Image 1 (tube, rainbow, N blue to C red):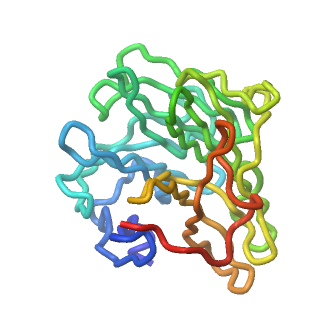
Image 2 (tube, one colour):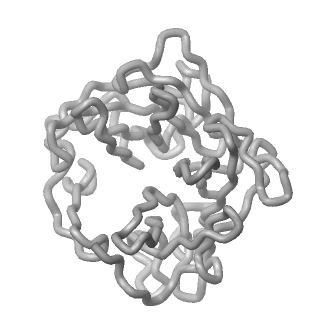
Amino acid sequence: TENIRNLPIYRSTNLVDWSFQGTAFTDNTRPHFVPNGSLWAPDINLIDGKYVLYYSMSTWGGEWTCGIGVATSDSPQGPFEDHGMLFRSNEIGVRNSIDPFYIEDGGKKYLFFGSFHGIYAVELSDGLSLKENTRPLRVAGDAYEGTYIHKRGKYYYLFASIGRCCEGLKSTYTTVVGRSESLMGPYWNKEGRSMLDNQHEILIKGSTNFVGTGHNSEVITDKKGQDWLFYHAVKVADPEGRVLMLDPLQWKDGWPEVENSIPSDSHDSPVF
């Protein structure tokens, strides 16, 4: 339980086999700006020579008291030194400010966030604080959470999740995507309708064996040039908790696709 509470860290050399490395925090060093809060949806990036961990902190249903914090380490294995809260929902004016995603673009640093009350972006200064006078910019509607943005060619692809994440076999979580020629959007579906209006393309949805297919995290390219997509799902045969999923990502006419839009039951492994 302590490991789960404090953000477990795993390492892999092939994206298939994973070994436990420790936790980002301990019970003594974990953040505390939300009393009795849980840590959710971490996003770790190498920024200016430091590993910077953004995390959500919330109690279930605490949509105005939750927020996003930041911690740093010299190693991806940690331990991480907490720098406390970046911002809280009631301070920044965005309900349910969780699910951080960091990206650099044009020499600037940005953090995207949000959960079913709009997806927003803010500019950061050094990665550890908001840029002075920055204001949240809404880039997608209230159907989404779990933002991840991938740049490929001239397009930015905004991946997000819709539906219910956490109800076991009743989970309806589905991964969707839109694209834009600008980081700040607007992001469109294939018909030219905007994610600001909750329009998107479905990338991966539930199947007979897996449901709750959502909150993808990274697109990683192997030595063969094949892209791979990470996300999580509930295994129907063993629905306790959620499992890490990996599927090949194909590109067709400038759009990402997963075969049959459902999780594969087996596949060749990535090549490294």
